[in-house]
Image 1 (cartoon, rainbow, N blue to C red):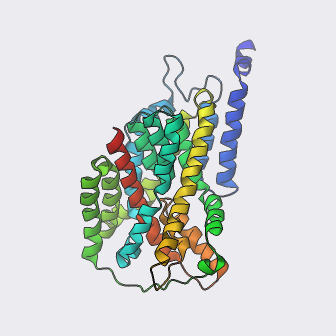
Image 2: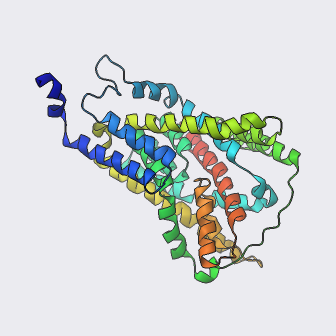
Length: 368
């Protein structure tokens, strides 16, 4: 009987706190439908690794399955990079190719990354500060790759913050957008003139982007290469079956393994420390200023444009695809049910996906 209940005597309050955190993530996933494909496995995995003497993580000479998955899929960057193939296959660059100037908003919305780096460097070593700043990319795979390559000691907290804030985009962005815009600005209609993008343009785009980014930020080549390879599978027109597989089966399968494997780094002794709260706070600052940077840049451009832009589309420049684009579209409809901003906001959103990879690559170039 003593052996049966000995685990109860090993239970610590910190583990109970982690159970509550895991339960909260699962609640957000199930009840609020916030990124359930990620938050549900992360939340459940958090409970698994915080059970006393859990066999899911390494205990003495016995290697835990989640630690094995971490070494096989995250320590070598396999899971995030393979996931990028699926993400690339989902992305339609048509709106950007129709209106290339939208790409500039993707760059403007990365402002928060570099501001957060300056703040984080006050409290953390440079490599950790750079890893924390990339939370603002709103791009989980990029955050994982950068934190892993820079050898951050806080990779678990960084991964959890990156994916949690991605899920909370519908809560974080609208108040910031409303604070920085007037109702008159939110009512601005943007005409969308659908144009047929030629097939060879769609095929050449991912190839050219890979070359350009590879020259600017060589460390970003794996990230941008896998993302654009996925898009090339989609656009080439001869691999429809592979494209469907990448978008559905591959992306979903890797996301499941990625989510539950992230939880291996959320053990109480690693997660419950003051630095975690600071990382969460700095990550929030990055998200806020990324959103603000995109909106304010659009307002600045309106000073010189005859045909005004709806500044809300600037907020979609973060890399949370396609959530941020949909939020801007819904906010436009809330102000005017005939104000359709979906194509413009999605165009900015996919630009943000590219810009976040470039930003992550530049940080790696600077600090590796």
